[in-house]
Image 1 (cartoon, rainbow, N blue to C red):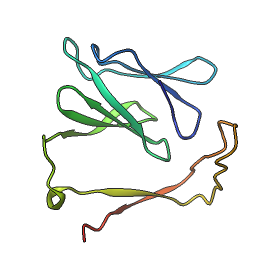
Image 2 (image 1 turned 60 degrees about the horizontal axis):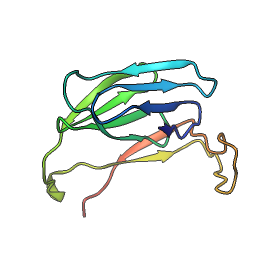
Image 3 (image 1 turned 180 degrees about the vertical axis):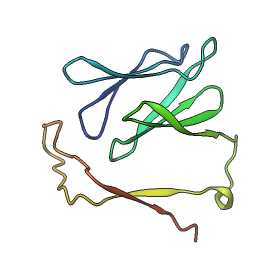
Length: 125
């Protein structure tokens, strides 16, 4: 179970034995479903982008899938190597352009919302 950073979606996956990711609104309405394959070990890890527009799902088939959270469809698949060389990896950083102020002590789930983002290639030097 994982809340999106925008706090408008709750991501749920049942176990590592099945690859099914479900997305629900806080009111309990299902807003999305994604299943990459059947009949093998499933989801290993899940991470939202800070804007909640993208969702990365790592799975036991050795692939990370990047989903668009508006359509719940994959936009990119990345085969995972057992070892990543720093010179061979491209790393992007998401920057918040909305000017929204974070309230780290707030208990309100909507305390941090990102409306606009930019993506910059992280310099390897």
